[in-house]
View 1 (cartoon, helix red, strand yellow):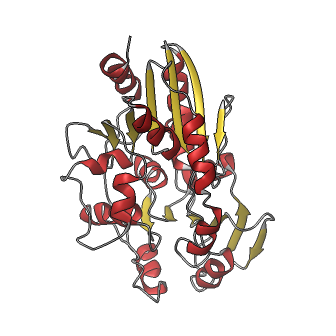
View 2 (cartoon, rainbow, N blue to C red; view 1 turned 135 degrees about the vertical axis):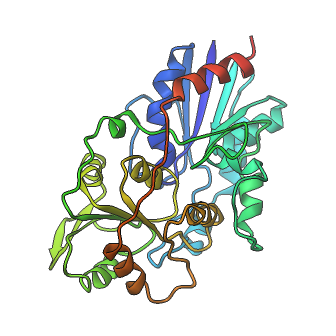
Length: 329
């Protein structure tokens, strides 16, 4: 059996989940990997057969998407060329993690593919989402169209939605509380973060920055470049995680029983939906309309947070069921 696994390379969540899923897919046959996008800090250990430009949302430094740089990075001519040159008829199964080139190529060639992603969960009307008019809804629906859907979310809102894929390396961590707080806000300049956090001097902050290549310290705030191993260690031993409105990062913090505070990126509808879902569980959110973050962060640090999420390890069964149901023989 020949399998193609197409992965979105924007952000770290898709690649992190793929690292868990790739070995499982390899058990069923010959696996080719396709990655498009340019914003991931986490890398795959397996060889990538197709490295495509795709469409990437570029993180800004003021809490949202950098629309200008995102527009500059788009190359419709290259997208159409990659899409037309991608030959998919020989694959028995095409699995798509919100990757647009292969999804549209499948549509063009009349080939069925299955989405295996967090974004696939939004095909269900039962998934919580704010009642807002947002162009992001259109992108979420048409960015990577597929016929079949297997989604992941914080809860099993529908029969095709499962709880998050928690990486084996996270499941193996010993969770303990050494008192510091871990911070990962990829759409915010670390200088802005430091200026804010030094105003809460009674705790240690460990900030992982996407915008700085050198580690430094300012008072009680320690800033370091994004590093998977160091971040995992910080997360395992922290009291709480302050992060954006992504999916995998908050899910891992909840799995480890950590306090959680999220600030979803502005102009990013999926993150707004994630934050809205977490809000339903009683977790704090800093919305884009909030100008002064300090009181919310202080309140989050001062108050305990009690929650219990059950994210069982069922990834192998999900993959097995998917292969049996959707593979063409």
